Image: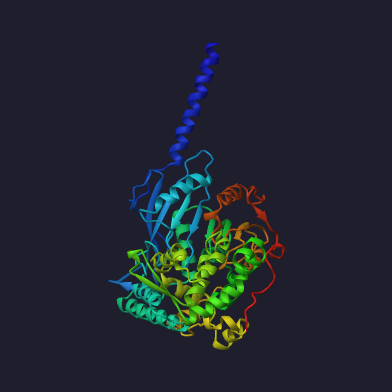
Length: 520
């Protein structure tokens, strides 16, 4: 018996020894110093700028210097990007991390002190069994420099207090962006070093500096496009991808915008027309919509604003603002339930019923969480130039919407030199990398119809569509995180969850085929 207990004790001691050795190897000391890559990019470890648990480490990635760009005889990085690494400490830890990339382009990854708690909670909930790496892209969030444009925000604010047409608003905001560009150029800021290809190169440098053998990429909206470019440019480095609300490289946002706007209106009309309760309560919502557009064009609605932080006491809702408002509201899941009543309230000019909706709209338009300079630069540089004749042909398909589709054809001229040397629409080689695709059926800006481009490029894809969900599925469907967790464990097996609605191809969707009936 004594020998038995001694054997048990020995086994326990051995297990404890293995545990402590494992823990020591698994949780190395807080990283310090810097890693310098051959191209001059540097990862510099530092104390976190927020109160961090012991499993969270922080650094800054100093981007690879541009050729010929020197300061004091030394090559100088253009951007310094914040990096946060959340270390998984379980026995089942895998060596391939998840890299999350923010959308936009130009959005923050949420790394500020008042935002990081979201990621700490998400990391625990997701059970990734691997590290999570977060970073801000060039010019966005806590990037240094951050390419903010207060001139643009002020122009948007002024657009709400004056009765401006779509053309006038576009010219006004473009003039503000031009002033912003000229100011930044004068200050020597790297406004011409922005594109998806630049960001993909930064991610490659981050991969090399952190030293992980392979990566799992997590993209949402614009960063789904960035993820596929990273994978195409770095064969063998990417183990898997989750693409939430896909924006394929084959799509050209400026050319797609008229179709997106038309489809978003169609969704409201079809939604109400297919429900007896909605028809009974609101009548023909399509007719009311266009009558409201005509009325607001002649007699804009003035609405008092109660939030002093917006710098506005009153806003003017004309036809142009009304259409923008309806499109923006469809970013929110479940909004199709509310928008017929919202149109009805505008139709009857019952502004008291609209104040909460309008406040949310104003806050989203006036907040400084996205860099408009980064957004415009990347959209202009990534997509081939569009001439007026091409756009006019597209506009002719939507005659009633033409006044609200005005495009300033000079909007991309600021980045003309970069446009000639960039472009990502040819990065469409078929790949064996497994992909999990998540799409909301009510998404107005990255619709389900865009998924086929990715399915054709990545044949080892699992596609899940979610009814009554709009943009950014994982933010709105907790079970989508469960799908992702299962997918990470073994990307060769289709994940399962009670919430899913699987589709193998877009043609299986229940989306109505009817086009919006735009009065001529």
